[in-house]
Length: 317
Image (cartoon, rainbow, N blue to C red; front, side, top):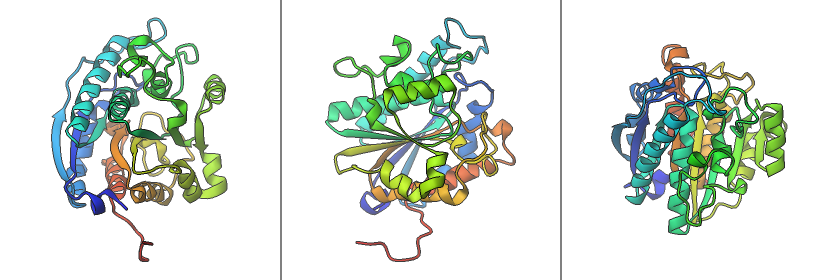
C-alpha cells in the first residue's frame, strides 16, 4: 500500500540543491524553485504528508571550465555532494523522508551515498531505482566531456576518483552500492564504451526496448521483485526519463522515452510497494522548459509516488 495509507504522520523534508556543476548545459540550478512554483509541497500535503521545506543548500558557483584530469569541476562537485550527503543523512537519522530537489544528477552521489550509509548502519537492505534516459555509468576514460552528471552510478559502485567513490564513508571502506542493488529503468542513450562497462559489471537495465517488448507493468514487477519490510527503496528520478514530447525542460533530451501513462504506472506501482523511503528529482531545467510544464508534470508524477492513483477498481487485499 502507499505510504500515506500506512504512515500518515510521515514527515517529508524538501532539500534544494541549486547547482548545474556536473552538467553540460546551464539551467538545472533553477530546478528546485521551479518544482516549488509547480506546487510540490501542496501536492504532497494533499496526500497526508507533513512537509518541511529546508530551503536550498549553498555551495560553490559553477566556474564553467574545461575538464582537468578527466573531470570537470571536480573540487566543486565534491563540495556540493558532501553538503547533499550531510543534509540527506541528517533527515534520515531523524526518521524523515528526504526529497532532494536538483540540480544535476551528479548530486545523486551525495543523496544515494547518504541513504547507503544510513541503511548499512541500520542493518536495512537497499534497493535503488534509477529512472533515467542514461545509465550514468561513465568514467573519465570512457567520456571525453568530463561531465560528472554522466558518472554518478559508476562512482557509487566504486569506479572513479577516491574523493567521490569514498564520499559516503561506508563501514568497511567499500563503495556505497553494489551493482545488484540498483535497477535502471527507461534507458535509451548509452555510449559504446559505457555499454561494455555496464555489461562487464552486470547492472540490471530495463531499457526502452525491454519496456516496449514486455510493457511497463512487467518491467516494474521485475524491478520491484524481492522487496520486503526490511528494504529501504530509493528512487532517483531524472526528468529526462520521460519522453521529451511531454517533458522538454531537460538538458539532454532523448526521444523515445516513457509516455505519460507509462510513467504514471511506473510511479503507481512504486507507491503500491509501500517501501519508498527517499527520493531525488533531478535535471529539471526551467531555462529549456515551456511555461514550467515539465515541472508541473514532475509534481504530478511525484504525487503518484505518494498514493494518487487512477485505479477505479477496488484494490486487492
